[in-house]
Image (cartoon, rainbow, N blue to C red; front, side):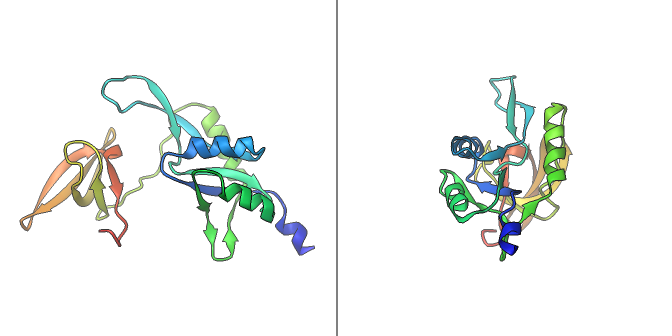
Length: 176
């Protein structure tokens, strides 16, 4: 009886390599697995283009519906670009069906969707693009319209720089 409950199909979060969400999604679909990759329309950040593009709502993640049968689990994790199923020490943690249904409705509406702030005041960040690329600093605040303020320490003093939100990445504490 316990085996039947464990092999019930549930939605799970799948972590992918950076910018491999679509590759992983296509690979899993080819394996006849049920996948959901929520995407939203945003204006391209490239200066030479004004087009609207579709990007993942949750960069680096997608959802997969599976019963976690050992054979299915292996097929999932050996797909190119997959990092792991998100979970705890006891294994992958299922996502409620209501959450997936809500996300599907939100994405289908094709209206602007705001996501929660990913950074908090004091987080260590690295500028990865633009004129300040390679500079480490401390996140100060969101300025709006995709801009953030980052403090850069030099010679015992701080200088605040205004950069594009997409040009910075969070630095885990072991790298900071």
